[in-house]
Image 1: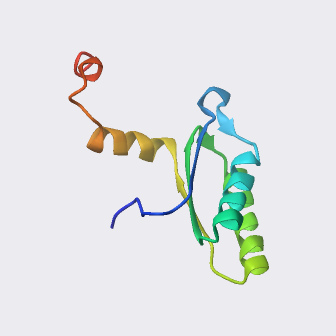
Image 2: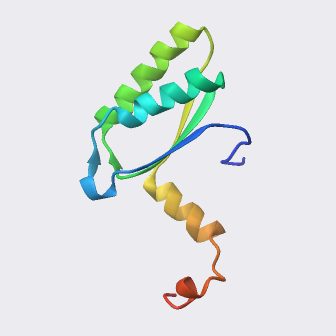
Image 3: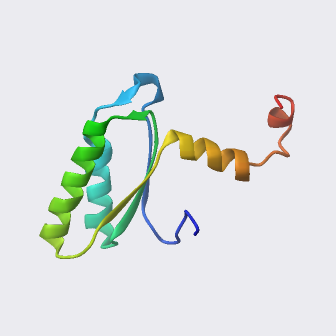
Length: 102
């Protein structure tokens, strides 16, 4: 199926220079997206290696938010590998600066 959905809030974060993502800020940004929009889905596009601890904290925070709001919540994480794949498959390869590097 399609990766992207219409009218869904998204957060874009770049932790590439920091290596492993250890911060709770991206998780709290997703929570605010859900609380402020009333939507039950939010995207996190993130560069940087996601640690198992980050994924565990994300799941725990989602579960807590589901209990608080009384509805199913989905945090859709698009990691750096998936972002690269999307760019390679759907990027604008007609731009001269990209063609020169191929």
